[in-house]
Image 1 (cartoon, rainbow, N blue to C red):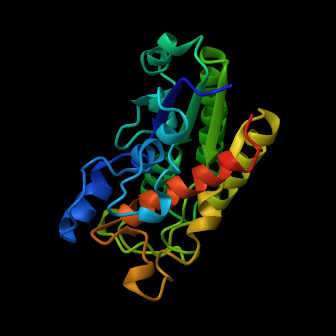
Image 2: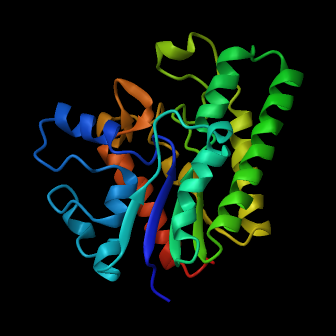
Length: 248
């Protein structure tokens, strides 16, 4: 059955703002909606000619695109009734839904709790797990005829725990909790019969340890956000997940 609506949900991993700003700083002449979700819906041929015709709208010409993602989104924000209620209008439609959320939850935890306080970190991150699963169940209940792509979190530090950003202060981030959260997302995909888009694995080596600026998939000035190349690579993982035949 063909998709009728593509709904993008989540945080800035999905949005246009940072990729567009990155492209503008590089002097690239392209459209402004080049975030991961927008590219999945419709490719930007000037930037990515190799992916021409491999977007959703080429396969489903009548597909409606609805972007419900917003900057700084957290699981806590998204489970509010007013957020979920935006899905009610699609309750009977056959939808594709991409979900990127959890990164902002963890960043806020890492900022508020010292890396040495493992008990508090563990408790706080377990609450994120609980909210993520609750959010997923709400989405499935509201839009039952949906194919959902759960997206793992990337790690801009490439395993080093060192984020080149003043917003997080100095020191090493407890990135083991990112890996634990991604493992939890994988378990949710299995148990809830949803698809897993493993952005984490795909992005390894394209952050702090990339070795060359051409291999860096994050915004240089805001290295927790995807560059225009990073947005395309998130889109690439979604496409590959859809074409793998493992989606529900």
